[in-house]
Length: 382
Image (cartoon, rainbow, N blue to C red; front, side, top):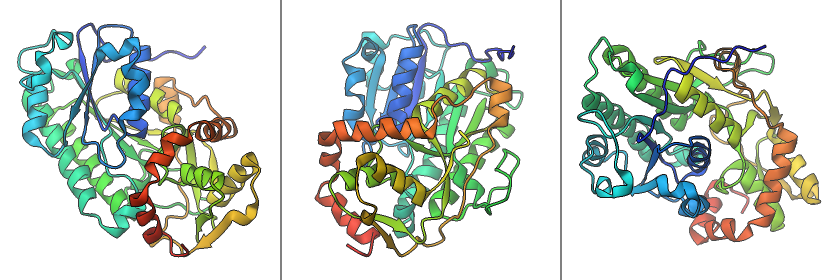
């Protein structure tokens, strides 16, 4: 019988979780799961700038549910130091709401942070990396500095069990694997190859430095490629699904043999909850489902499920500096925290294709004139 790890961070009544980027793909799924699983008076504050990838429709069902009474949106930028400080100190106007009345230790209104806000599309980082370094690096620094300041943690870290900060990162910080190389572990060196990956690696190291220097009870997670409902159609799987539905070409970089380690977004969010509650401060946890697939194989699976011709696949010039393979060893997460992925890739892809078929109105609003302008710039065959 597997031993269930002890709960290091116990969620109690009248506590507030700050989720950054909560209107995005992973963030919206995490908020939904947290409110479903956390059946107490715990509140969720969603700090989101609502850039092109943030979509309030992703949380419409949450707002209309019973859990919506414990959900609060703050539109703003993680790079706005004054705004972030006002959330930690409780001076932000949102705390005037009776529904957000909290029992907090003196000086701070946030009990935990799940930091998901990020610029995340590699192609866009290759075109212009400035927003990636601003949001991913400076935004993270501002967030951990506010956490450190308002919790008053010293080098001894005496308040470690009163607070948690989870930095949500990516397997791309490790760089690229050769076909027969073993999967990345948490001890693998960081060798980011794209501007996006480099910005995330810098953010990870910033968080771990604050954990080491100040005793901030922070943790870092690194996950494989996510997929599932509500993912922006600039990403590989939803782009190929929606293009195939519309009988548009599927732009496949290079030979399509690049391998990615796929995980359904709900499994990722389940892991984030485990790390929040049971993870050891200062540690890094890989999150992976051991579902390696080549881009070509995924494209063919999508077309097969939609009954579309393989002729829709169109090879385009490869992405600059394209990593060949990602694969994560999640043994640490599985053995220490008792987490395991529940959805196979075949089942997850089937349900994901079905969701995009049933929700055309959602993604067609996103694939607007601005989207197609970006698309034409990214893929040269159009």
